[in-house]
Amino acid sequence: MFIDILHIQKFEKGLNPQYPEKSEIPATIVGYGEISSIFKINPYNDWVFKRLPLFVNDDDATQYIKKYNDYVHYLKEAGISLPNDNTFIVKSKKAVVYVAQEALNKADLCQNLLHTLSVKETLMMVDNIFKEIKKVSDYNREHKEVLLSIDGQISNWALVADKLVYFDTSTPLFKIKGVEQMDPELLLNSTPRAMRWLIRKFFLQEVMDRYYDIRLIYIDLIANLYKEKKHDLIDNSIVLANNFLPKNATHITRREIDKYYQNDKFIWQLFLALRRLDRWLTNRVFGKQYEFILPGKIDR
Ligand SMILES: Nc1ncnc2c1ncn2[C@@H]1O[C@H](COP(=O)(O)OP(=O)(O)O)[C@@H](O)[C@H]1O
Ligand SMILES: [Mg+2]
Picture (spheres, protein in one colour):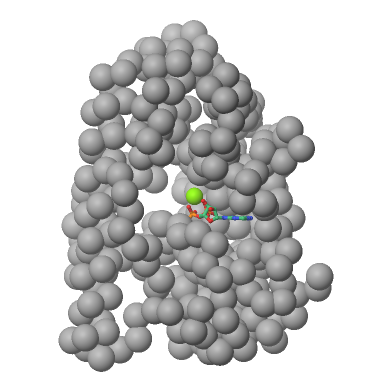
């Protein structure tokens, strides 16, 4: 179905970020990202919309969309399957980007398949995800000028007709001739103003770097099995991942996964707590509208 930008504009105008289902054009929340919120907006049921309220002005938003499209193009070139998409800039107080993406079935999301497939099938799926991630790493080796990142976590893949589809494209981190193309300050725009120095100093760089390194991408994916309550898959997944690492790479160990998970849990919990505090200050103390939509309690 054709998406009418006027309808998206109207949606943005009537959006209630605290209670999206109570917006003028009601929306259903499909998922919470780290920096975007993902909706279904009536009547476009074949699409999901990722709302990115990160931009100070139109130029920033246009620039983002250009990078986004480049990134999607490169990922496809690397052999990764992506859903159809479309982008929109909506003017509000600032400029808001909506990335529309073909809606995938809930049952096809690998995160859900983790809990419905047999152990053997699950490990096969995980192995295939490792294989997809390696395509990106191979692409990077073969293309000296372009370096692509990928957040390979299981929650970013779907299995559609036996083909893995990657859909977490709205953080387009990639380097051209060694220069990062995504402005890290954009990521910071989703965080509390008063805390930005802390985030900048302690973990922005780390989080931005980790998705360029195949070994760290694998570690990140495996450590997340804790969050998915799939501890029993961890040891086998480590073996599978190690098979895909370059010959000279140090093998991933269980100890390393456990340590990484503790650290990562701390980072994201702090991040979310700071955002909640910021929302409280914005709404209650300063009496303004808080722009972002935050998830409820995340069980880790
Ligand atoms: N195309 C889609 N179809 C169905 N659900 C989606 C789609 N894209 C995202 N989601 C849901 O929203 C969640 C977050 O989306 P994602 O693009 O990974 O955002 P983020 O970059 O913020 O992690 C996903 O884990 C999934 O549950
Ligand atoms: Mg994601």
